Amino acid sequence: MLTTAAVVVLAASAAWPEPIVFNDDAGWCWFQDERAIVWNGALWAGSVAAGVDDPSRRGDIELTRYDLQTGTVTRIELHDRLELDDHDAPALLPLDSDTLLAVFARHGNDRLVRTRRVHADGSLVGDEQVFEPSPDSSHGVTYANVFRLTAENQGTGRIYNFFRGKGWDPNVIISDDGCQTWKPLGQLLAGPGRPYVRYASNNRDTIHFFCTDQHPRDFDNSLYYGFVRDGRIWASDDEPLGTLGNQVPAHEQLTRVFAGSPDAVAWPCDVELDQRGYPCVVYSVQVDGAGLPAGQGGMDHRFRFARFDGSAWHDQQIAFAGTRLYPGEDDYTGLAAIDPADTSVVYISTDADPGTGAPLFSNADGKRHRELFRGRRSHADGQDLWTWEPITTNSKADNIRPHVTKPADGVSALLWLRGTLSTYTDYDLDLVGYILSRTDDARLTFGADRVAVDLGARPFTQFVFGNVRRPYLHPVLGPNQTPMTRNYPVAPSTRAESHDHPHHTSMWFAHGDVNGEDFWTMRGSFRLIGAVVPTPHGLKAEYDLL
Image (cartoon, rainbow, N blue to C red; front, top):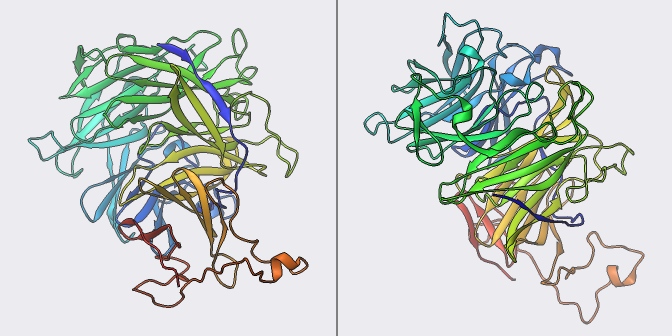
């Protein structure tokens, strides 16, 4: 069902601090997952270095480990100078409580699937392993999408890796022994062209996927949905269409979610499952390329969101996606990401106002840049309402390709690439983002020099710890979102700021060890008066007034 969503764009707020730089040289594509995960007390993110500042890193396949307690960043080289191409970014999967698997491939330049194992402390385990799934194929391997279905293999679990391979189609290999060995199953889909596929799994018994007809420069793509269960391929109306590697369906046999046309060319951005296990997808549509040769279209894209409610699909335009990233790849946008913890939240990268399509020009340098927005879907009066809040504003570089990790241990990460992307083999990008700590009532956003605290989805305060002699809270906002505190640091020239007043009531913060906590600790645990306390196991509500 196609509907129109109402859109509201909010003014910028002070709720988003400067992001953390996790890797100063990182690129990734968006057809491999999971690109980043929270596991064993750390954020792990795979990427491909460009070697802009350090030529020895050119084409390195890297894994970044960010310790959630100490803030320490460790960069792990998985493969030295494989090739400079963001399609080679690794997909990550925990194998056990102490071992992480990274799977990657070149951009079609050989037929090998590559794997590395990494300990929880960041040390490499053994050498790189390679597997050639189709020695007789004339097409190389590209991408990796790795999932474990715990209900399969007699309850011991089976690992799947989906990639582009033989026939330029999506192919799959499986492992029943923790990736010591692989078995090729063959193709997921058949037919001419090369469908582009995005996957999501419940990690138990089902892998969902959305695909296109072909590359959008070659076809006016529609968007299709299907899923894999018990080794068979199904559409959303529960009709089995074939078996993996044997009598596989063509993509046109799947459920069509969106019908493409010359002025509506689809490409998937991200796929997730909602709390009921139903699939949803955010995707881009190019609307200005009808009749134009490659390189002349792509100046007007839209983001759309489609979700399944158990009986029907609901699909709608949710925002303007702006212009192409560069000529020749007219369907490349800044992309979008669904929050796995709450699929009513979507993050987008766009160089246009999400609600009006007006160009976004930065006050910092007068140039048009891609900014990051967070959207939230609500429903009233029979229609969806999308409210967009800017995360970045007036940037000096593009903010592109957002990704949100699945929550673990009470936290997740919002990540994106900041810098310049000229082509998929020519970029100068940092991997940046926030650590998001979640409870039902509070959200903590850990940035580079402060922690922003929202209560009930509204800004409450910021804990500033960077480049200051002592950490401080400012501002503390009341229920009507007006500050309840004076400016900090105080303004000496203003008597009301620099002198106490009879009506002022002081609030004092404990420093040193108080009940096992130290407010002045810049990393780790600290108290937020009357709010929440981060702990290694999530958040707890409490306060100290002295």
